[in-house]
Length: 325
Ligand SMILES: C[S@@+](CC[C@H](N)C(=O)[O-])C[C@H]1O[C@@H](n2cnc3c(N)ncnc32)[C@H](O)[C@@H]1O
Image (cartoon, rainbow, N blue to C red; front, side, top):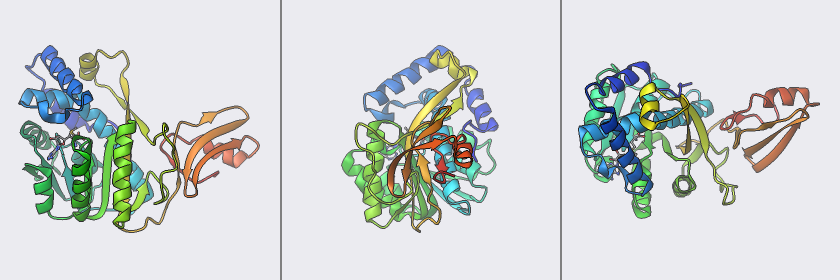
């Protein structure tokens, strides 16, 4: 299991980069970038070294935590998966590559690509502190061109990236990156209804192209959730003091809501039900919302079912569970 917090050396490099910079200036830049994201503008306002650093300080811990949780779901579903090569699409500061390095000691070659020059420079600087990533290859340019020319990789990840594309571009990119996926493709998005909708569209497209779902869904069928409901998860992560100060936050943690899908070329051997919300633990029973191979299930595990109740007490939102046991 990968921890949701940035590896210590990465966190230290990130915070060391802050030295000599005005905290107020960094916070103002981070605010401007977040506002641009909220308004649908994407990363196009990240135009300097200081902007890249502000973005990374504000968002990298949370996007890292979401990727880590998605990779934990992947390793839960496929404990034997040992990729040697990674392709990180829209890599930004290298978030997904750092998380994948933690999740898979088997990875020996890291290929990253992104259009944004300051984010690429920051990723390369951060990678210097990580021996396994020090030799990574980071191409700068348009994802469509670069992905078309990239070597296929065992594991391909696009984290918090496809939301910056139009619907037509997403369809085109999905075809391209699936063609570069030797084994497994992981897509992570914000856990909003819009992020979920993008994941579902891509999931449907690639299942039609032969992909199978390893997580979070225990099936390749239609998503059984009906709007306004949507499939998303939440990962708690610690907030550093710098982050707390920058965000003016009161608590030393944050909860990142995310949506994701793990698509594989081979049919996964293990497909367990997924817990879709935090179960309600009562004295008489535990009520849980599950996505099962047969569809959506609101289950109640009564206390008198001693084994079932004891198992269900450990269920957490996002877990893959054996139904009732
Ligand atoms: C929100 S950032 C996410 C960065 C990183 N994957 C993460 O999870 O922290 C989105 C990244 O996608 C990149 N991007 C968006 N559209 C792109 C395109 N067409 N070609 C290359 N990079 C693109 C942006 O430059 C930006 O670095």
